[in-house]
Image 1 (cartoon, rainbow, N blue to C red):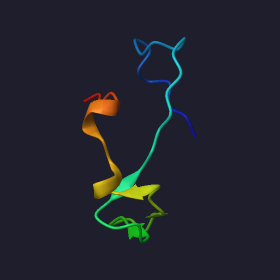
Image 2: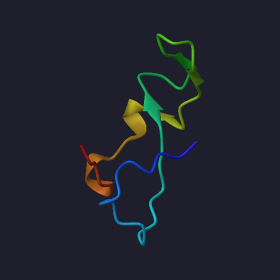
Image 3: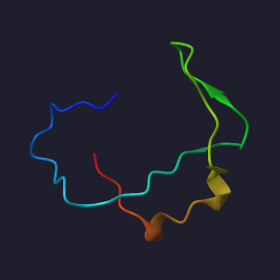
Image 4: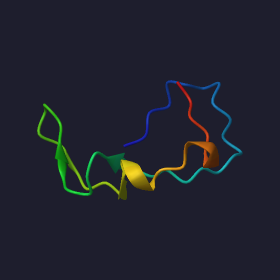
Length: 53
């Protein structure tokens, strides 16, 4: 499901989205959604990507 509420977001760029956690084990949200991170926090290089708030 993709939200189209942020119409100012540039649509001509490509991003690779990776997930990370404190470990590489599954993470469950309070709502029950489970995510298997791509890597743990030790495998993240903060200078190699872009973070948007």
